[in-house]
Length: 250
Image: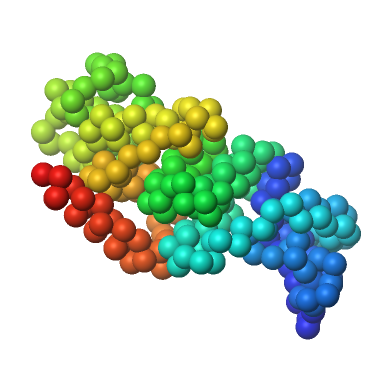
C-alpha cells in the first residue's frame, strides 16, 4: 500500500483470518516492521476500520520469528501452502485458537527439523480438516465396525474406512491404508494436539498417508491450490527418497 504501508493477512485466536493495515511497516526503522513480517508470531492491538473489514494496527509486539523456514525451499513452500489452506478454510469472526496452535506447532516442527515436510504436511492437512468440521470416521470399518485389521481402505469422498471383507469389488476411489497409516490418521484427527506431534511414520506408509490427507483436503475444500501446485514437484525428491528406503528394506 503506497510506498511504505502494507496490508497483512493474519491468523488470529479470537477473530479467525483478518486483514490489518500497518502504516509505515515497509520502512526498516518503523516500529511495526519486524512484527508484521512473513511467518511472524506477534501480539497486536488493532482498531476496527470504518466501512470495511480491515483493521488498523495500533501496537505490536513480536513474540516469535520463524527464521529457519527460509533456509529450506521445501519448508518455506510448505508454509506458503499451509497459509493458503488456512485462508480458504477459516472465516473472519470465527474463534480459531486450536488452528493457530496447530499452525505454530507445525512451523516449529519444521524449523527444528523434528518432522519432515512430508510428515508435517499430512498432519496439518488432516488436523485442519478435523478442526473445521470434516473429521473423518476412523473408529472402525463403516460397515462391520472392525477396529483393527491387517488392511483397510480409505474412502476420500465419505471420509471413512472399510475393510477388504466389506468392500464390494465394483467400488472404486479407495486408497490402501495399512495399520501404520490408520494409526497415523487416528492420531492426527483424534489425539490431543500435544500428543499428535509425538507420532512418526516413514517409507511407503508415509507416502500413502500423504496421498490420503492431500486428496481429503481437495475433496472438502477446493480442487486446486496454486501453492500446492508449486509445492508438489519440490517434495517429489523427498517422496522418492522414502520409496528408496522401502526398496532397500525389501
